[in-house]
Length: 384
Image (cartoon, rainbow, N blue to C red; front, side, top):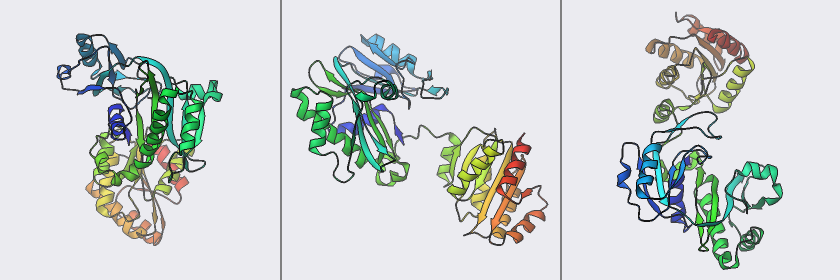
């Protein structure tokens, strides 16, 4: 799960990480007049799950109350495209208004999961406020990396070494080392894959302030964080939300071949096979190893809600469920759901011969395939 800026800052505040003073958050349908601003300049920020907001007009500095409210009003509902949205326009549904900061220095700092070493790593640079990817490419010598022990967290000597590397002023030295340790604790406590502040600033008043926040947590750990479950799901489509509500693992993709598969590994292999056959999958959909008729019926309904789907490929391995039971489920589900596009089915596993006979005698137009490769080729051809 990805948190928008103000949600991430709520987490920071719980851990004693300093942030800019917040005046309020206004959402679509609300009036910016609800926000009480008592100091200027203030900053008006679009709350979307993408970086590069400033260049896209999503961050504005207001010098007075009227200007701040006008900026907020104009941002709400605007379509925003940044270098991180892959050409997709994101609708700004929330706007954060907070106090401006008199900035002296900007620092980049984050904690990410290093998949090569299977442990967290703290990454920092004394040149913050810009894309860390560009900085790593053009000035790699300015990037500091510190491996972190999951159990022990960031050790005192590591925090001090980091402070020296970033040329932290002596009057902020102790405060910064504690800040770095707290940031790592946020990462571990929240089962995160990324906790990032860009920039962390040193103000002219010699204060550390997290100007931005980016937190990404592991969805599989949500059961340990009940407060996260109450947060809105801003990334999922309406179809994905509906699938999640009924217990189906579904992710929408850009292609036109709907997929129904049992098992995540087989589903990934099916997507690759469709790609090799010259097509593109419309979704990842795993009905699970013990799929029943009701689950298969629901899966068909979910797939058909996507108007891009021109053919459906069912790729099922009968393990926990026998192929004849699966075939019966497909036939019954097909009769319950009006399938308006070609249906391709490949079965393999226990009692596969009996399963294929059930499909053949069903009276329903089903294109049967002997292999995943054959099924993919048929589906790609039919989708065209």
